[in-house]
Length: 373
Image (cartoon, rainbow, N blue to C red; front, side, top):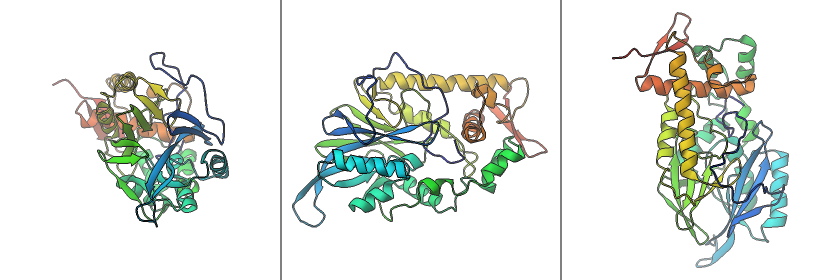
């Protein structure tokens, strides 16, 4: 894991939830090929060089006005998410072009959010096919900032943020200090223009009408796509079947409340019909969205309860509380995400009045359960 809000979810062992239904069973697309999950919708699975070792990408049959011939419709494809920019991902896409595109062009590249495994290769696909990029404004601007090396994803500001939450190991922080170029290493370039997606907006892709569902907390302005007529949801990282999406506080917004924003976003999705086929960015397509949302709500409620109990007897900093939330050893890479997630849970409790936050003489934030009123 990294100091970046990249694609990886909270590091957990993948488990099977028997209450969810996986209509494709154990079937996975082979590298460079795709599996049709619904008419005109194909599932690609591309490797990642992380603990979370894959991302699901989606290829949708499409038809759009021809850019240079008035009144003419052009057949082709819309891509949803791209993978990171590395030789493996480029090779996988070249295989897809040869085996899956049927000689038709990619007409647009739609990115759910700016994390590297979703955004990384967008520039290459857009340039290769002269296709426009579609994404939300906050995600586009965040990608520009992260790619510019002007952001504080790594470097001294991130080190100071971690120090303020109790992480004081010099050798660990030296690694964080050196990570200023981590995002551009996977997302080397951002397309110079984009088409804006907004929550509630409708997007016609082929003969399907998709509604944009805004999601917050995991990234600035994540967009999932819902086809209500055919009960399909391209959920991005907002709804994953077997791991919990990483929800972190970052140095640029140290008093943020992303866990509340994430849980509020899930609540807006809770009425999805049970037969909705969810197409997630990690894991297998599944049915049972409301069940999965309830599991995630319960998961975070349990973590919050554990933190409240741990901070009853004494004030604790976020770093000290990592063993409460994560029951296994974490390396430096994993700890960056884990600490951000711990602060997200603590900030929710603090901002809701269930905890008090103080800063000690060493400049470290400590949290304690608020006394009963």
